[in-house]
Length: 358
Image 1: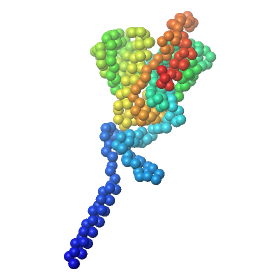
Image 2 (image 1 turned 45 degrees about the vertical axis):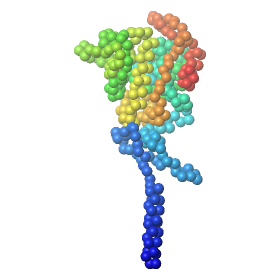
Image 3 (image 1 turned 90 degrees about the vertical axis):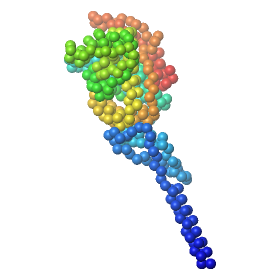
Image 4 (image 1 turned 60 degrees about the vertical axis):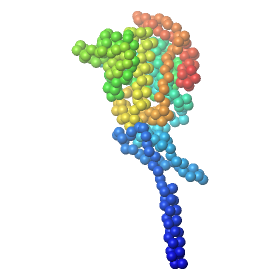
């Protein structure tokens, strides 16, 4: 009888031990494993914030994908990015300006490259819209003339005001580079892979060297280029000459297409970098721009773009085909070949570009 009682007591103890062990195992916290992007560069890896417990229910398990996304976002928070940069706006337009300032120029010069980088979070897309330098338009100050002269004569206020008046595009921010800062920027960012046609490669290897000498200021003795028809990794000097020339092809029409190609390719390259690398490059690149954006705001826009996974860039140009006339205008003793746009058509088309309905 005594042996039976001892056996029963041992059985009860064993059952309780198994139950308690099972409870501890069921309640064990399992940390999500992160796959894909490495975040060891420059920043410590933050722990993901636990998912809040829904009212009246159990805590939802944080999926591996959500945990990785949360971890990636924290990189920008730790870098003091203005992550609420869009506010209540679905669209933000950033004007990109390439200033035609040479080595000996002391004053502000023409904006020979003008592109609107438009972010639309409603459609989850980016639009890149070139404005032709030879557009002859009414200015926001009541005068008229070539669009590219507004930056030289009245700065960013006159240029952005004229774009809004004529094309209905509100400019929220701007980024401007001249030749020298363009080269400094791409020394930092690295080479860009561009598919050249035979005419482009042949020109850059030959007559394009004259552009290079003007930009570099070193004259003769520069190492010749051996660019080829097809894929090339262009360095900072080659990129500048590629973007600047309008001596080949269809003049400024093809030049604006080349400029969009460089911006689009570089943007997609940046979207493939780790967050920590993008943050570091942005912090170093900010000093090269003339801009109204703070470093924190630039990081904020990159946060929005990367958080939403926007990698595709839609390319456009103003004026659109069939929406302008070619005329000759007198400017003192000088005669100018200009493009006079049909403003109503181009204004409505620009809105379709930005809103993703074109």
